[in-house]
Length: 241
Image (cartoon, rainbow, N blue to C red; front, side, top):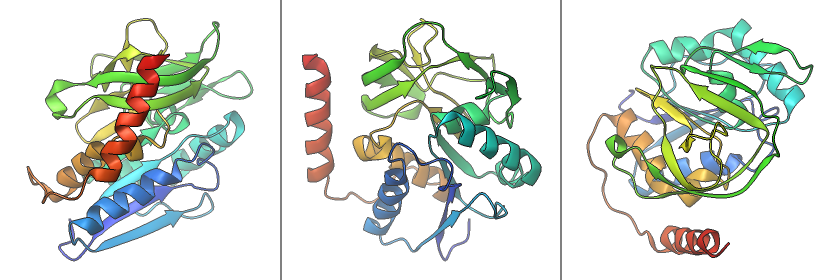
C-alpha cells in the first residue's frame, strides 16, 4: 500500500448503487479519516477503466439489467481481477456479490459469467423474495461483533469448497439456500447480501478492511457513540419482529 494515502475505489456507482450502498464508501472514508489517514477516493463509472493500484474496492447492489451490464464490462476490463491478484481488498454487496462469483442468472434468464473472485454460484430462488432485517454471527476468524443489515433479493447463492460463509444468520434468509449462511469470503475478498448500508450498521467491518489494507492488527480507537446507537436501534428492531 502507498504510505501516503489509503486508496478507496468505488466501482460503477452509475450501475451498482441502487440501495444506498454509496454509504459504504462514505463510512469507510470517514473511519479512515478519523484515524488521521489520508484518503484518496475514486468513483469509477462504467465507461472508465478500473484502476489496479487501489487498496480497497467497494461494489454495491443494483437491479438485474445494470448487474448484467456491470458484469460484462468488468469482464472486458479485467482491472478488478488484476487488482485482486495484487492483493487488494474487495467488499461487495448483493448484485456485486453475485458478480464476484462464478456465475449468476441475469435479467434475460440466462446464466451470466462472473469474475470468479469468490467460489460461489448464484441463481434465482423460486420461493418468495428475501426482504427484511438480518441478524447474524460473523465468522469467528474475523473477530467481529454481531452482524446487522437489511436484505432485499431474489437470489440464492451456493458456496463452493474455497469460500467460507461470512456469517450465520439468527434472523433472515442470508444466502437463501436454507443452511443459515450469509455472504462469503476468502482471503481479502468479501461478499454479502446486506444493505443498510452495511458498513454504517457495522463499522467494525470497515475497520477490518482498513486493517487488512494497512496490514496491521489494530487501529486507534475512535468515538463510537453514534455508530453504537444506530447498531443498538437496528438490532433491537430486528429482534422485536
